[in-house]
Structures are given as C-alpha cells and as structure tokens.
Length: 244
Ligand code: BTN
Image 1: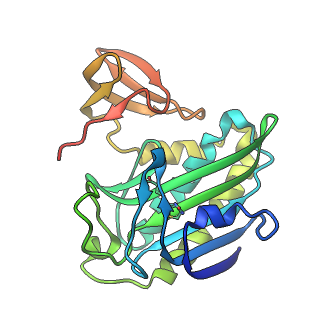
Image 2: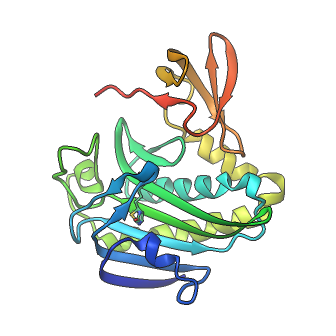
C-alpha cells in the first residue's frame, strides 16, 4: 500500500476520488482534516494531529454490487482487529461504527462507484480517535485509544498495523467473495455490537420495540428477533436507542 500524507486537506475521501492521482492500494492521510464527512451527511470533526483520518482506495471488481456490504464488514473488522492489537476490545455497531462498550472509537464512511453490477472503485474512509481526550459537546458518546489505555500511542503504529491487517483481510475477501466471504462474515458477526442481547430499537412507522440482534447478512441487512420472530431490516429501517 502506498501512503500519501497531507498536512491539511478538506476530506481524505474527497481527495481520494481523484482517479488520475490515486489507484487501488493507495492510502490518503490527513494530519488536519478541515471538512471531514460522516455518515448521513454529518460532519466528522477531530483535533489537528491527534487522530487518524485516512481513506483507502480499492478496486474490488470481483465483488458483485449486491454484496458490497462485505467491504464494510472487511473494513470494520480490520479496524476492530487493529485496536485489539493495542489491547482494546471493540464491537462493531451495524453498519460499521466501532465501539468500546457504549462509546464510539471509530467511524467509517464508504463510498462505492458501481459499474453495471460490480463495485468498480471504492473509497474506505476511516476516522479513528487515537490521542484525543477532550471532545466537543455535540459529539454524542466518543472515546479514544488514549482514553481507553490511559496513555498516548504513536498514530503511525496504529496506521501501519491497520494496513497489515487490512491487506490480509482484503485478500481473504478477494479469495472468498464467491462463497460470500464466510470467514469475514463469521468474524464480523462475532464482534457485532448488542448481538444476542435484548435491547430497545426504534422502527419508523412502528415505534419502539424490544429486539435481539441475531446477525448481519452478506447483503448488509440486520436480522433482529422481535416477539420471537426474526425480521430483517435494511439501513435506516431500524435505529438503535442508546442510553445516554
Ligand atoms: C461516521 O461515523 O459518520 C463516519 C465518519 C468517517 C470519517 C472519516 S475520517 C477520514 C475520511 N474522510 C472523511 O471525510 N470522512 C472519513
């Protein structure tokens, strides 16, 4: 993987979209990201130099568009495993946030370019809270590597470890995509946030329910048991209600 480091840039995901400059395997890193983008049009804000904000370019032409969620799984799992190497146990909150207990340590924004029925190019944008210990009030429930370990770590070591883990997992995805990347699916589900625990969820149009997450399918749909019946939900069809 080839790493490009920018002292200041609006968003590494936006930069990575430049097809003339970047191709598969390139990693774009910002020391200071001034207009970081999050999921659902949210912004992603981090303090200059304290955290990891980077994007990985991949060209997974082997991946049918219907199974593009496997890329999310591969990315979130790689972050979770990377943090594990630093002694931090995490869970993956569907679709692809990484949590320590009830607090978020990493956000992921994946932007896919589809060509007919395949994923031609994808930007995997990753924000890991590494050394930040004070967060703005509006950020709901943040944590960081430093807050979890009680000491600062070298951000570059975290990035290097991520690249190693990701390369291995991405090869696995490539080699097993035809059989729906069973190993990745399994390991993602093993780390799934709130799996097999009864919790409250909000379902638009139905209101609040008690449900038990049973797993995520290769399509990305979430299987939740409600009143003894397992139903599947697509992105935005069900929301977590986290105690704050
Ligand atoms: C979220 O949790 O809402 C996703 C946050 C993703 C943030 C990362 S930081 C690096 C990359 N560049 C961006 O503009 N966003 C992603």
